Image (tube, rainbow, N blue to C red; front, side, top):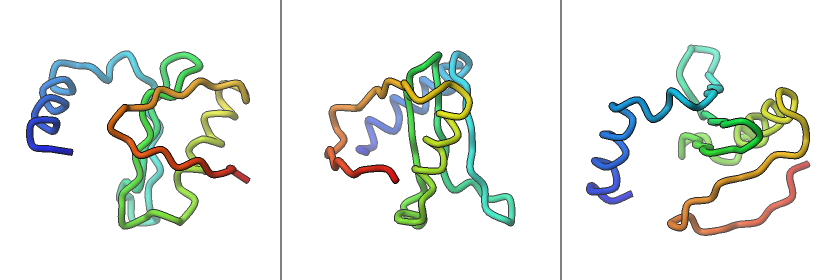
Length: 90
């Protein structure tokens, strides 16, 4: 993210943008956040994983948790800046 993007999202969060979202956080054994998923109804509106934790199954675990809460028919909101990499989730 660029500095301008970061500033934009920081202000958005400060103004309460996450109040409408249901947030679930994956934490380490030491209580450190490893990733988070944000849901609005049946839509995944955010999914973030700490880059140091990539490849550890955290994103998959968060999606599975969302499915357990909402069912297997979830929608996904994708930011246009993301490079799409399609992988099958086991």
